[in-house]
Length: 125
Image 1 (cartoon, one colour):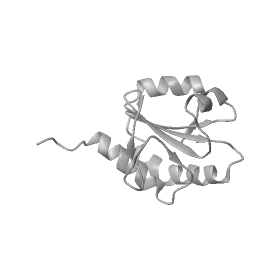
Image 2 (cartoon, rainbow, N blue to C red):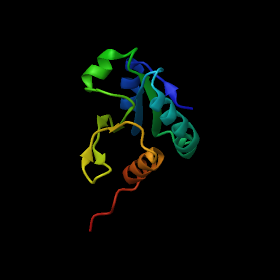
Image 3 (cartoon, one colour):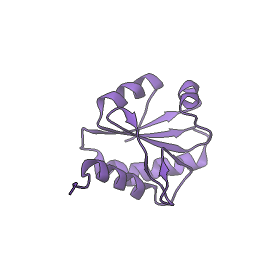
Image 4 (tube, helix red, strand yellow):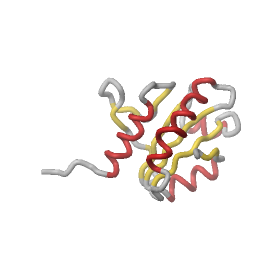
């Protein structure tokens, strides 16, 4: 299950875990509810036994300082942290992104592929 955390809890989790996937949401947001269902059904089962990975959500209505600090302008917004730092990843159009904004039908594949690339980086020749 994706746990709803406070800003203080999130900071601690980001420092403790190798990979932290953060779902920024609000309870009134319809697309946020859709992402939550996809996370629960497809992403959590894939990584629930991996102690290096945390999948959490943070209510931006209750954690407005967090939202301002990370310049979250719309929701849902997904962010990824590796070794305590927010990271860039390959976006839909080949651009480097630091977040996913909005609901994407393939959000589960994006997250799973991201985690797999971090776990199994390409070997340098």
